[in-house]
Image (cartoon, one colour):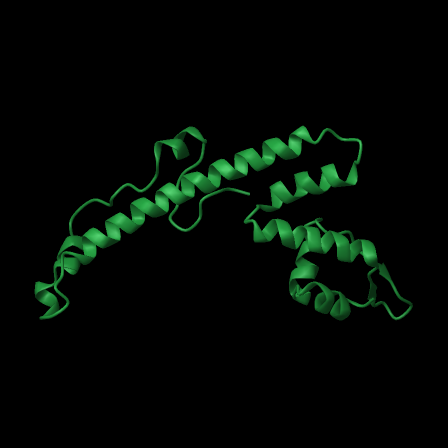
Length: 155
């Protein structure tokens, strides 16, 4: 099948398929005499696996690890279990960070009545205060990475 058909069958944009090929997540397909990519069922299965992992917010490195395990049926599945355990921890840390963020935003919202001149706005006044609130949790520091709002994990 051509790349457009693979895209339609998997719900994955053509550009993303090409990206996964460049990143080595999806093996390069054979080429036709006209130099068109020719995908087969194994590409479709692998792409669906990758998309499922991405729907669980897994990083490319995590997906690579799981694909390597999938490609070696005799490999110990303990590595997959450990990977999911670590990913679950990252999700739990991010949920705690989001709860903290929500609380900070509610506190900020309570600084303004929603009416009046912007020069008297409590939100704007509060945002002008020196220092930035810390959102990173202690777990993040122990996990060996820095917290950047909106981007939690490396990889």
